[in-house]
Amino acid sequence: MLPFRKIIATLGFLACSLGIAHAESPNERAMKNSLRIIEHLHSVMADQIDLAMATVVDGTFKRVAPEQPVWILETINGTIMYYQGEPKFKGQPADKLVDDAGGRFGLKGLQYGRSSKSGWISLSLGGKGYRAYCKSQYPMVVCSLVAM
Image (cartoon, rainbow, N blue to C red):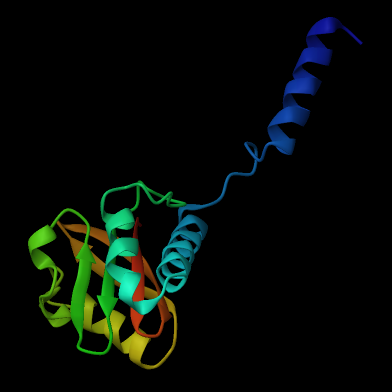
């Protein structure tokens, strides 16, 4: 075998073994991102939730997909705990999250949480279509946004 072919074969093997050749889709990353964040928030005692939220907000918590915007809802009183890029949204009713088509994606996320389900919602922001994976674990819902 020529040295060049050996190099190509070795690089191909390394790419496969490192997962480069089979990278996760944005949808898979969104699902894992939401799951990792909600597990992080549930790993602390209730009186420490603000500290755990602070690590998500300030970026010290390592997310699976930091490139995907997230929002976190609290299902008991139906409020926004965190909306990436808009700190003033904290504490506002989740039903105020409305997309371009008038769809209340905050309310859809709450419905997932209140029925103990996780799943996908579709929304339109800035004239573009998006999907968000919302993972629920009482009393929170974490949604990760993915461009379609």
